Length: 300
Image 1 (spheres, rainbow, N blue to C red):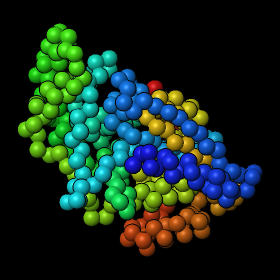
Image 2 (image 1 turned 120 degrees about the vertical axis):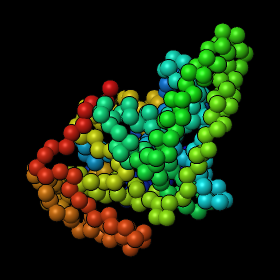
Image 3 (image 1 turned 45 degrees about the horizontal axis):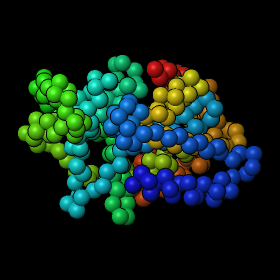
Image 4 (image 1 turned 90 degrees about the vertical axis):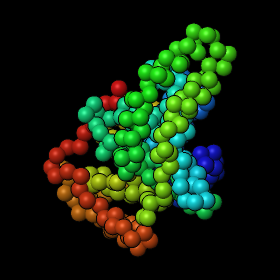
């Protein structure tokens, strides 16, 4: 899915750019990362496939992180894939869902909880559709995984340490095999397709079309060049980072007031109306603050 998505995007960039006046044409950036490497700059360490960063302006951006998964014929999604051993990062083999959550927490303030993982998504696809499930909506499952992970850590550590001491010729595969054995009793391995899933196209629309200063569900706001560039620097080497820029001439309709209380303009109302009609949901923009400046600590 990742390769198909990237290929389709690259092939249509000329058409997309051609639709904009020269003065306001967005910029496009390409970042690469190691999908199968053994360092912290690989999917095995982050649990993620790619990230989308939308630059609303030079000072503001929104970001979301995705792990692509196919949906089975019975409508379930397997999230139990075991990620590899990462000794340099102090990580034993564990299910990918835990790596994905840990990566999200690293990019949030220290007091963040699973409620704040609204911008970390499983991107679920089949032959004709693609929808998203955020980690924040899987809190019970995530808590079960965390509890079980803690319970087997001592035993798994002993087994992996022995493999290292024995200089096992296929350490990575052997460590994952030990983890699979210990995780065997854990039965909650799948998630079901929600009754009203978030369509991937809708998520992109929300991130790009919602005016800054209003809540964009499914996206993490980054305010200030330090926060944006900090995210880019810390993430571009650990997963595919796709950037886009929203380029609109400043008008009373797309420029929030200092108090952050500007009413949604016609564009936002049209987008909200289309989404509501198409999916039965109300995406009318709502303010994220009232007279208070949005901020985010620089990513470390």
